[in-house]
Length: 401
Image (cartoon, rainbow, N blue to C red; front, side):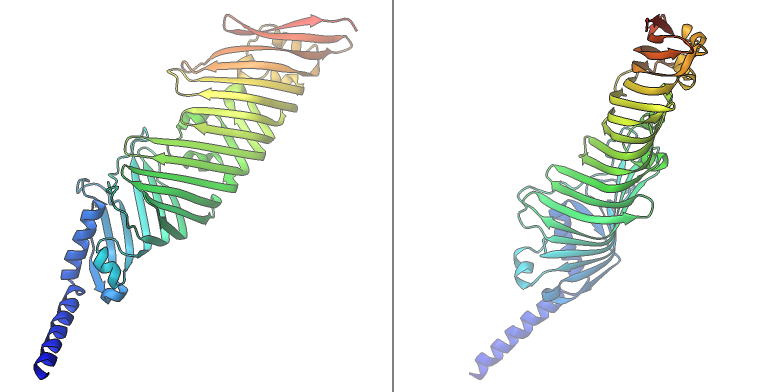
């Protein structure tokens, strides 16, 4: 019996010694981190690893991670001030590189893109056979989208939970920014092939030309031709893969100020929708006040995907001041339009089909329209506007009362 008891005690002490050795750095750091790197296709740098036993996991401080295939000169994929790995005994034995849960503090994810929106950051390629994925909690997190030629776009929040799925993780959170307002964030992250999908939405987004210009991927010429200001609903969808980045932005407003410089439109109190899908912009059901009257744009299309961008508008107006109408850039030298303005009572109603092709400093203009106006002390005038050899012409048609 004494011999058996002694052997049992020695075995226990040996097992205890091995366990203590395994959970203390640097052995724990080398073994655990190498397993994580192999499983997740990343390289990990950390200044300190603090063990807390197999029951409680380990804390990693000042963590810096980049994809295994990324050159050493590339920025880190993400950094974290503190990462807490939580795994019980069973989890440590069955899934040494995939703990039960991970908690990060001061987490910062950075994705770099070229001017065309192509992702430059190397994303990990996690094997699809990986079935056990941990829950991940991010506290004090930040997402940075850095596109060449533009200021980095920052999204920050206090807390975010990533739930595991068979193919990756899902996330859902909210954040409030003093400049942009309150936004919700939903998304999915997949490892094989690497893909990140995000949806940012707000019920009361603060829209200004400066804010809109900061949104990455949307061509700058969009905001050169359409200027929005006010508060409205906004939804931005991003689909990011190593080969391409697709964006889709939808803005809905009720009291917006909108300017379309090329058409001379400076409207206030506008309701309607603006939608940016890649390099295609649609303005739908816009209604507001402009040129002293009411204006409606049932549908407008701005196509920046063509060699020479084309902008088309269908405009319906009521009670428009003729002095403002004939003063627009497209109406300069407009044949009889300017000469007839002094004879008209001052307001007109009608509809215009306007098309602009951006072929150079001076766009190609094509305008067609009809409407009604009044002559001072005379009958109603039916007017026709058309483009003849590059010049906008006004042709009145008198009708008897």
